[in-house]
Image 1 (cartoon, rainbow, N blue to C red):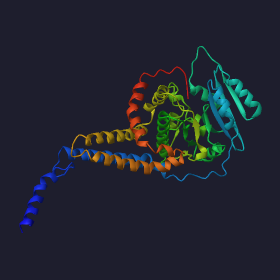
Image 2: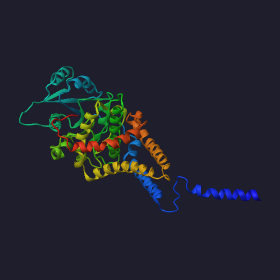
Image 3: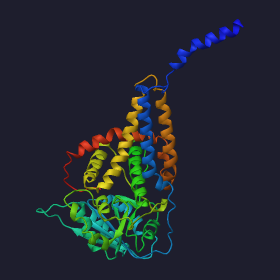
Image 4: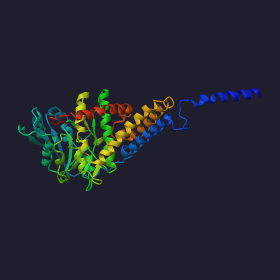
Length: 398
């Protein structure tokens, strides 16, 4: 009897300690409970963003690549690109496709670019050159060079890429072209960066991958808002019916994303996703060069449609809100143990949703460490946005 009483007394004496364990009790709405609610909201916002902006590509089944082989004009702008053209142009010229032409616009190059084009033209009769001579009284950007190439195109169906890019296979043209139809006049492809050593390379590739997952998912949802000029196709008549680059000609960038943002509708855009349809580019070697490239690209965002800006804003807001809510959990002894648990749940959701997309875009190695890359990008993107305020373009680059 006394033993049982002692046990009861001892258990009762432990009650105050059990109540002060580092977990909120939700018996009242105090500081720890508020932190938990904010963290739960952050996690929910991230999940909504994942389902809206990432899941469509993960579940995308693709389309048939049979029987759609209309003639195609491939347009490439080149400014002092003799080395890249020597290395990559043959991979474009040897595509397995019945009828196509390759137009290389030599834009005021002062290296050996013109001679490289001429030498390849002796071997490949479907290679055409368009020259732009330097004019001391008129300075132009890439959009002018691209306009020259588009006007020179013989065929209505056009495929655009850059001089420092190369297709992943000789089926690139066939697969991108097969995504056209009577209704589909714009085709969005994936322009990846070469896999190289170093953390910066992983960061650049992960950034390009995440951007692609979002704009390809938007295209699948019939809400396309951008594409990349490294791997983009559209009809010539669509380009001119939308007045080309007229509304944003004064901006150095935007020949790809701003055009798609204006010309794309809920019915005229398709996506092409396969290992054979990817193009690869050489990434920047230094953070400074990448920062300048990103700052230039970000100058186009203010000109997006309101719906596009809202979608992108929500994606970034959900990420920042989530990680700030994790920091909030660390402010109380009662919630600090929840921070790694919530982070782990977010990592699991991210890996599950991005897994298939990474495999479709041939980037499976980016999954490991994706949360680290994501946090680093969240820290440095404000630097890119600040830098764009002082960005003064003096020439066009890829």
